[in-house]
Image 1: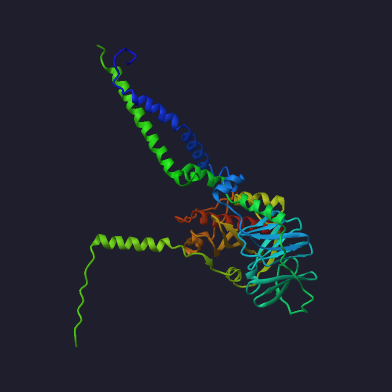
Image 2 (image 1 turned 45 degrees about the vertical axis):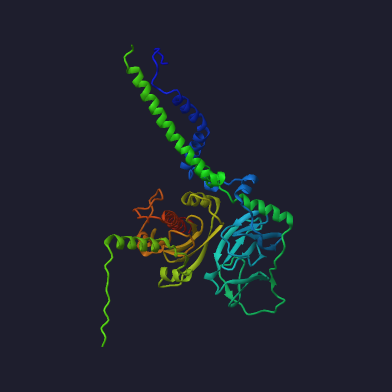
Length: 258
Length: 186
């Protein structure tokens, strides 16, 4: 019955359905709105540079650290390569690293060699610079060592040397084998590896990716996108039901009372 | 002599259109742009045709780091930058990430204006079109205003937005550091 005591032409199921659909989709509307707003301001909020540390979420995503490719010790510090990320003790030094050949302490710096690059660091693990080794010596770096105050590089083309700043690399005559202290691989302790694994996994899932996946439903496994489709259809239904309710009630109110 | 006759059937226009679009999509879908296009040595020869430049280094202290990071929009890795100089000309090589992988870009600067921009190595999956001269040549003669904006517009490339942005950042950085080394640091 309408407020004026006339029988309403609005079917009784319509407002009830409208209400329950509205309540049922409330959580999803909030979720979509909040994630949508956050993603809209993704670059301002630097969401791509923020990472999720929750272990269960990383596990849910299947993000695991690959085994370390190599570890070298220099001046009491350990350089370890995991995937494409290079770690200086327990902090990330550089990414997109194509291999680890050796690490030596010379003068005030630690030199770290990859097949194509030389990274100079301070003793407290700050990166001084990355040098494209291919610009200064032929072939890839195979081995790294030191001789007095010089850094020694063995490339496919022979032996080369530079000073501790690695400003210029020059060919060097082969000295006696004993003279050069070559860098040797070491095995990182299980404690170190556990810490590095946590670090590696901690950079595996950005807040932006998580929000995108929640927004699209992909975070809820294979059924997620379908669930979001249902939510989308429900929102369309709510809009249409609401419009229908409004139209029927407006029509009822305009009918002359008997 | 036996005459060989062949019948050439003409494809309907719509079918030719579908094949053409298919071939076009197949050719554009292939990335194939990753690679090392130019050695640093070759870039330096291009930039300093007449003489071999001397290598210099610039230490990035906190005072210099702040404007650099503002220009780049992200933290700057490293405490030292090496560059090449001859007379009033400087050359810079930087790695800058477009989306996920670093792009190695070389920039030479003279009198606070860009002379040459070259993409030396491209590692991203998309956006490799930035290596072509039709894009890099746009920077020739470009300067920055006091607000560190280019004094003329640079046309982007559809589908290579992040790579274009990376090149623009590196060019701004090279112009800034060149000005710094030429006028303030020296």
